[in-house]
Image 1 (tube, rainbow, N blue to C red):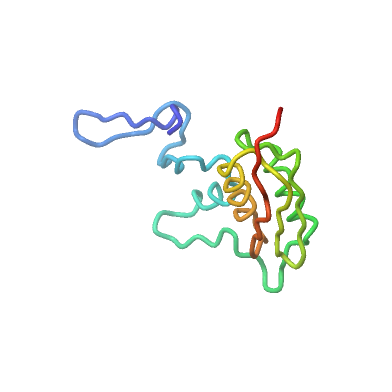
Image 2 (cartoon, one colour; image 1 turned 45 degrees about the vertical axis):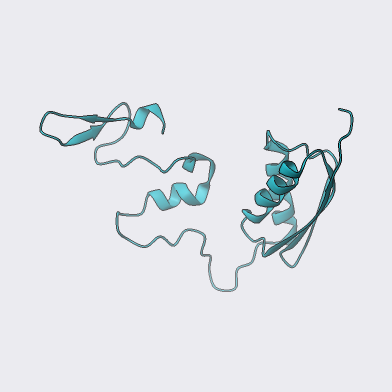
Length: 133
């Protein structure tokens, strides 16, 4: 949890959030800053349903936007070498192909693709093989 949300307990047992959090703020869930849907959800009043991630009727992200988002996230992932990964998207169906160094990278690349908004299904055709860096 970020330092600025560390809870301080007062003598009467109640608490407050310190250092920069607005009055009545609740700490965001772990990792929320990197997920826009979680940030939006954290703004919903406590106990109220969150509609984050639910777009207007008939809305569907374009395949190009989905592909672009996956490619950016793979590029930013510190634990996946994406240099040999190809990403194709057709009607929200994502196909990953190419090679990575380890099984963990193969699984992580699939996890990244699955979390992108608009990705309906991910087919992971990645192969792993050790290669010189």
